[in-house]
Image (tube, rainbow, N blue to C red; front, side, top):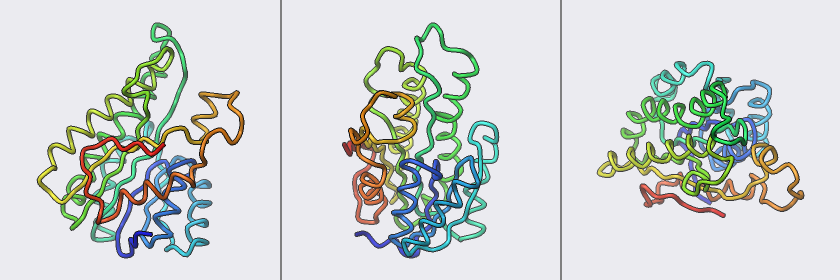
Length: 236
């Protein structure tokens, strides 16, 4: 298990699903975790789980990535002001919105998908790039989905935003290739999250892995020893 003692990690989508499991795993490995999600109660539960695993108390930031998007811009400077550094970014927040024909996508649904699945990544890159570059071994892991590179009927709303996010992250990786910062996309494959339950309501329980089963592999991508860069790493 990689020791992350002394490193500061920002995790989005941290109140449930994969983001929550990764937060607990990073905390268990010694990282100082900063948790971002919409609900205060959910964040408090994950903070309790981190402490129960032997980790440090987390910093909780209730933040709606769509409704308070501009607040994301202050995350990087605020983290540096408080902790003096930022070593790790794990962007796990995402929203399915709806599965619907492209011709039937409603403007409000497209706005939500683009805000959470694409624009949030852009804002996080903007605000986290300086401290991550300044870190001795900065690591950024952005969760993606196979549908971003494999278009399928009814998945246009979600997939288009994810595809844009992937392109943005790959461009960022190319731009920081000569720095110590390592940037990768991680595709966890089928995982039993609320997003997947909404997409596949008839799927039998136990068909997919749990978030806690994929979290260690994602945490490993945050290690100083991780050398891969600009890749889409398939975990399932």
